[in-house]
Amino acid sequence: MKTILCFILALTLTTVGSAQAQPQKLLVAYSTTASGPAVAWVAKDGRFFDKNGLDVSFIFIGGSGVMTQALVGGSVQIAVGGGSAAVASSLAGIDLVMTSSLVHKPVLRYLVTKKEITRPEQLKGKTLGISRFGSSSDILLRLTLKKIGLDPQRDVTVLQVGSAPLRVGALKTGSIDGSLMSMGERVLTDEAGFPVLFDLADLGIEVLQADVIASRTFMRNQEDLMKRFTKAIVEAIHYGKRQKRETMEILSRYMKTKDARVLEASYDASITLAPEKPYPTLKGVEVSLAELAGKNPKAATAKPEQFVDMRFVKELDQGGYIDSLYSR
Image (cartoon, rainbow, N blue to C red):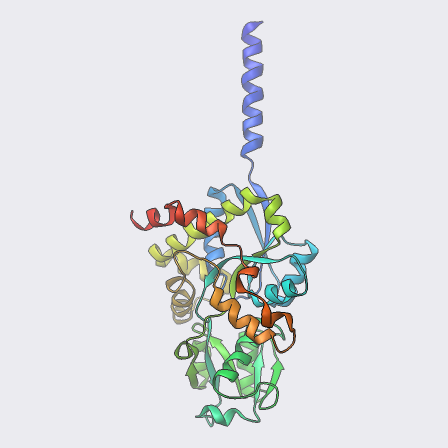
């Protein structure tokens, strides 16, 4: 009898242990098939989510604004996309915050135009394409125009076109005169003969475009899950920087291209430039608030710190975990 009881106890403990070891399911949205969410893709396919006890499924939701609505409605728990939509939502009293920024420099880095446009002032009266109104491409284009002394409301027409291939098509048909493109997408425009008017890196712009977003309520109720998610992201950045070939294979699957030039450029934009310590970018929030101030007076007095939660990255940083990854 004692032997049987011991067997039952051991079986019970094994069953409980297995139940506790079950990974937590998590639905994560991303808003673009350009390279912005690449770190999250690497965390998934490199099994860093698995390593941290998370069963992550992805859903593509085009446009940061629509993605934010999915977060608010509870359709997804975490999103990776342009944080400006989260800033706008937070100003409206909606419970969203950024916990990481996977890219600080603009992914949509190049303003590509028709051949006859050779100077920024020649953009006056022209039509420029974006993916969606309120998206990262929209916000960044308007910011860029202001930086070069043009009024995005009066000097140009901004047309909602869709994804990068659609915007390239619109350039070819003459429906638009220019559009912002990523390093990877620039390969397509180079092939089509459209020159780069200027590189946004020269403007010193830091923006919200590949940010981890969740609600404060979710993070409060699932703090341990958020810690593990952030740890997987940090590990994926490290892996991506060390394992270029494997990482480019992951990018190829999600971006649905085997073009080596596109993949090389996308890797540089999303992984080479990814910060080892992916704190939310306060400079990017400042840019977003400045853009929103014309529409929402609350943006003029808001502090960037209101829209971010640094503690998950900070814990990994101050505890020495991130430095330990790169010292191996």
